[in-house]
Length: 423
Image (cartoon, rainbow, N blue to C red):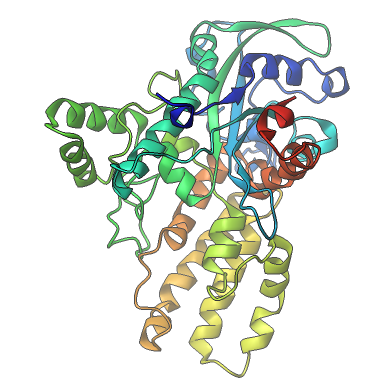
């Protein structure tokens, strides 16, 4: 093997990162070690969702009951996202992996100056070499490389998630913490890569790619089912191409034979995939396909004037359709939800589906079998499980690229920069 065949992962122990986050004295009075159900009235008829500890993942899914008495959960939130380092020439990219915890309030987590999110790795961005490899073979190797790399980076979480670990909090108390992978924050291509989902289908449910434009979701994907299907395909396959074919029958990517999350305790990677306001709604549902290199702020500004631009120039049903989409986008970003506001979300989605056919009739779209449109079906479920969308929006982690990737790169000499960036 030549040096060009090697892929180097720069990483640190995620358990040390968790101890650092929980042991920070500045955050001691804000850290929450147990789930809470919050209601708007004494009769407990109206449930409230905001912080991660108010969601069902930590509450009604009985996660706490599976652990020894007195133990605490550390909900681990992982985010991965390639980012461009050069703006015009050079094509330099890097592949950071971030870790934060659901024990910390979202207001602290999303501020870089609070140091409540830790860079734990730079994944390899080296190209696959080999003239004998086809484009499909290179894609397969890249997918398995990602999972092998994440297995190396996150392996310590497996044992600690099963047996627990002692952590000294910022208040000086020692607790037994169980770090559990709760949320994985990524854009759509990365969601498919992480969950081993066939591209073009849903990483959360089993809907077929030609049925994604409907109002109802299909049966949920589960980590156990996906692992089983991959294992069966692995045992039956007579070749790599045959393994890929067997996987795609079940809408599973055929590029990964051993997912990194297979042995993670109390984890379901499909449930852990979270909604993505920036890429799914602003860039996907409400985006302009002819525009590129548009910032998130610019897309939000365009959304503010959209209805005013088409008023009087488009049929009434088109205006109703776009209004419903904008209602959905804005309600999805509420910092606090209850049963009433979740109903607003449902109503907006119903109104969109009731009027969307006008876009097909006018020739604006041929169909709505698009993953980003389909993803709107899963927002209510995600809010109920993990709290409001500002707990896990990709926009928060893209902001960390400035400090942890771009500034680090500018501080290097631009040659063999990853070791310098790591340092």
